[in-house]
Amino acid sequence: MDFGALPPEVNSARMYAGAGAGPMMAAAAAWNTLAAELNTTAAGYESVVAELTGEQWMGPASASAAAAAQPFITWLNTTAAQAQHAAAQATASAAAFEAAYAMTVPPPVVAANRAQLAALVATNFLGVNTPAIMETEAHYGEMWAQDAAAMYGYAASSAVAGKMTPMTPPASLTNPGGLAGQAAAVAGANAATNTQAGLMRTITAAPNAAAQLAAPLQAAGGDFFSIPLVSNSINGVVNTAAWFSMETIPTAVLLGHTVNGVPSLFLGTAGPFVGPTLAGSVAQAGSTGASQATVLAGAGQASTVGRLSVPAAWSAATPAVDPAASATA
Image (tube, rainbow, N blue to C red; front, side, top):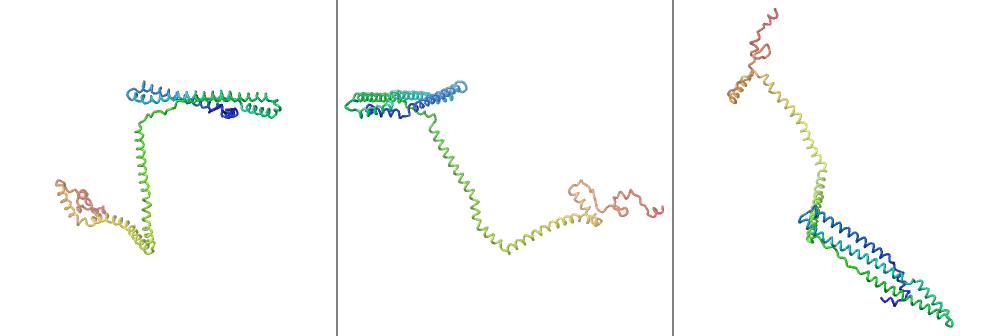
């Protein structure tokens, strides 16, 4: 841009209308902070790698890890230096602006010169104000040249300060094929999840579908069993079966007790008649099952003492007593 072709009103207004050097100083501070953080990170990486590979972790694996981390450490150091350079360039731009701002004629001064010239021209009767007018124009020319020089100098300084080395992103430390495998695994997991979700929806919907299919049958069955003749017949059959069940249980218990009492009653009254037969049967069973065993019991062979049945040995050991003699004595 040809700043010499612009009047001082324009150049001064542009210089004073801007935001000033504040934004450039803030940018320089931000770049310095970033550079410090990058340097700290690089130093931390170097310390950790050196500690692992030199003391706690030695071998081919540690060497491979150190080799993989070294490009990233180099990038951190390089980027930190570039950030420091950017901060310096921003500071230089701010300094160039301050210098140009100081050289630029303030807009109120330019406006006052133009107002003075207009007043002199308006009152220049018979050329009395001609020397003053020429002096005012000369002063205005100086302001023009001063503003142009300030703008040219600022443009040159800004061009130099604006040159920066483009920053590059860090190199990839991972295998791109691993990312593709991870994406495939995630896709497979999502497909399996969708399949399971579909099965769960099917299982969940099955009872509802079965209930919907059975609804007509249930409605028909409900209508059938709601007929009084059908319901009364079913109630009669069920009640009769329940009554028979309740009556059969005590009858069976009583019959069991009766059957258990029959053998003792039968043997007590028919003992003298069936005793020999039972004895022979027992003896025959004993001789058949165990040839060396003898009969240990018999029926109908007991002696009597009065009306009591006693073992045979008791009748021999007990003397007969005559009741008449006992009464006489």
